[in-house]
Image 1 (spheres, rainbow, N blue to C red):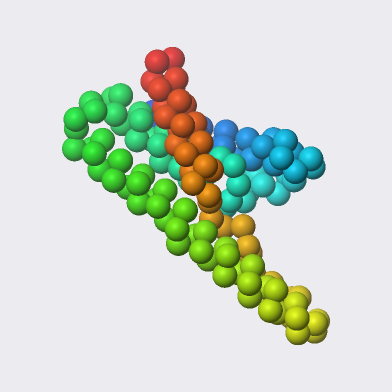
Image 2 (cartoon, rainbow, N blue to C red):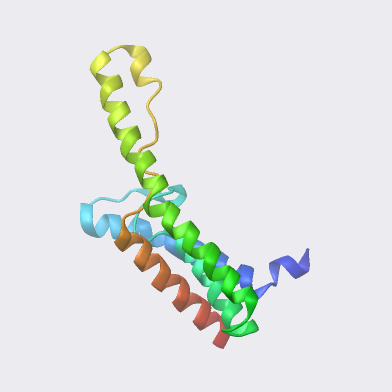
Length: 145
């Protein structure tokens, strides 16, 4: 168990995730003018915590194992898949949920409101980009500390 909680790759990824989730509250406040603490456990928002998580871990792997190592290459491949999924599939799911919720509200029945779908599940390209930048910075800083 100690090996897990002291693993630099997991620490870099987890730190990226945590900082990105906290940052979502402040970026939302900056752009929308209000606080939303629920963003701490949101799967959407600026920056992408999924991206920050995988890029922090991949960056730490690159520093530790070498930028030409097969393990770093694999971590980059997995990171790209996760980022693509965040911008593509998960974002499309959120867009569809928004439309379905609108259609359910048109029914104007009590049952319609009890089945509303979660709309904030994906990311825009800028959210993913800044999540990647944050993850790379965190992985680099933690490696050099």
